[in-house]
Length: 108
Image (cartoon, rainbow, N blue to C red; front, side, top):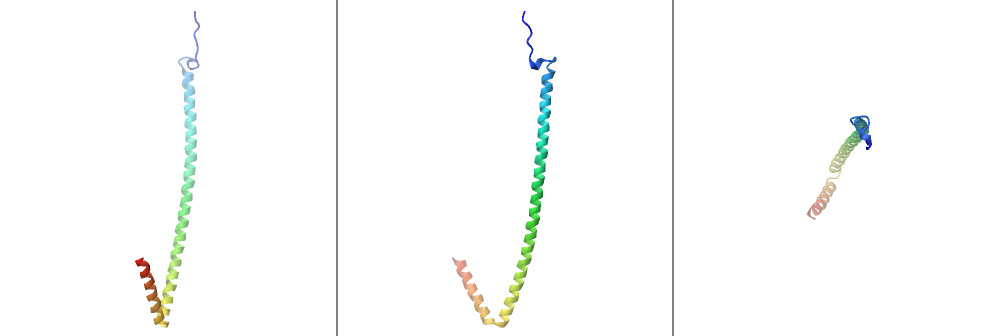
């Protein structure tokens, strides 16, 4: 008479031990997935915060640059007005030369 063989998945009656191990493994996998998802969420949050800070910085630099451009334009306008009043012929000659150069560049 042959003796009955026992297999690990059949121990403990009705294969419950095999199901328990699979359940534990599934739980461990779920825990690891949740851990990695949490870490990924933290990294995404840090990246978003960094991007937000960069956007604010770029906006501030853009605002400062705009203010400087307005200041330079105001200074340029004042200089041109003074030049027109003090030396109208020289100002007209410079404007003509500038127009000639721009026309030559535009044509090429």
